[in-house]
Length: 583
Image 1 (cartoon, one colour):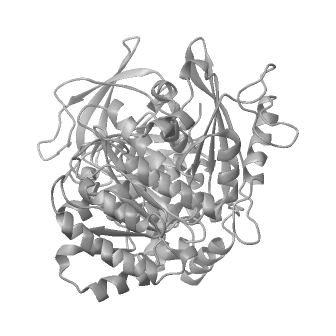
Image 2: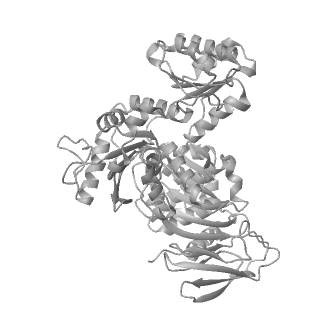
């Protein structure tokens, strides 16, 4: 981040006591409040309001003020002045806030074209940059592909880009090859109307930077960042520079974002990038050598983000529980979804529900039947997003330590067990996994805060910020159903101990007192059983969640029987075995 940007985006943290985070989503806009008390920040409350669109499809500022007004009402506080604007900094009488952080996940996303010298270096690095932001490229132009200039110009124009990323060459490296990419971009820009020309982000060899600046500074909006190859002088990182391009695009498409940033000087980053950053931060405090998987189901997309030791592998399926829901049927036929619904439903009725939900994404399930349909669709959205993630092998090798479930379809469940069952049925990871539910939609908020208020982010980023659903253990076992697989003992803080036999088949839930500390020990583990990533020779300590300790003994793969009556019976059995949460 350059010094000018730091000055506008960061506030002296010692003077920041009241922080508002705002996330503008496709369906809802959410506002959350964090306050400093006795030198430490804590989460105070959250509220949401329907995102309001103009006739032309732009997000209106009423989306933000409406959510803030609901927060004011819930907390009996004041953050807005008489004109509906956020008061910043805070005034006497606890009016306003000291800092505002904005993320957005709703609205149109930019079409991005990559231009690089080689596929295995510059193009790959730009692809990694896009994945961190939940994006994929619309087209790629690689100097090493050997295509003619005419073909490349045609590809660039046909892709109708909003942003073009240009990179390649180490310092004092391939300067002339970059000039040839510049010629392609120049000819394409000349063929595009001035108002429709793409923004350009250059992050290549600094020797070629001057020529790019002379050619494009009057033709298009061009930004220069550090060499993505990691060489040369550090001024503006490619990640920060790309976020700047994302913000400029968002402000053009959504006046509410431009108005909010103008009035509050708030830091603003895309919601998908903020979400990925939160998962990375959680990976730092997760169990050693174990990863975190974040699942976020939105109205128009589903994110699957694996974080391990501050690294991130994020994939986005362009299907969500709203307008883009029909895209799920391009990957999973309706006949494969029906067996996972525990009541009689025709294929045409399921398809009609999907289409109706895409037209009216704001509608919430009217009864338990429609709720189960949406939860089943959420399960398949997760499976589809996970299948696209290169890190999905972690589901099988025992290295996945934590799963964070998020999105309105997860938050609005009647019982947390519904969310846990969605996670278990869609992921079915082997080994020992702790499941959490983002009940207040704080993931993107924390990711946004990490860039501008590191103290706050460090103090609130922990699994305790989310609802602990429970610890789930899934072995790999060939033991026949009904036979004992192993035995375990559980000892509480008072020294009370219970010994339990774990039988193959179904789900075995051991209810425990929420938030209490327990130790788990293993006995008589069958030789044919594998427990990936679990040290069975030593005690394992943990804090109990809503559903205590759960053993998923359903087998290596979750397959439904062919008979419809048997399918319904099996689903009801699993639901009853997991049960509901009673505090």
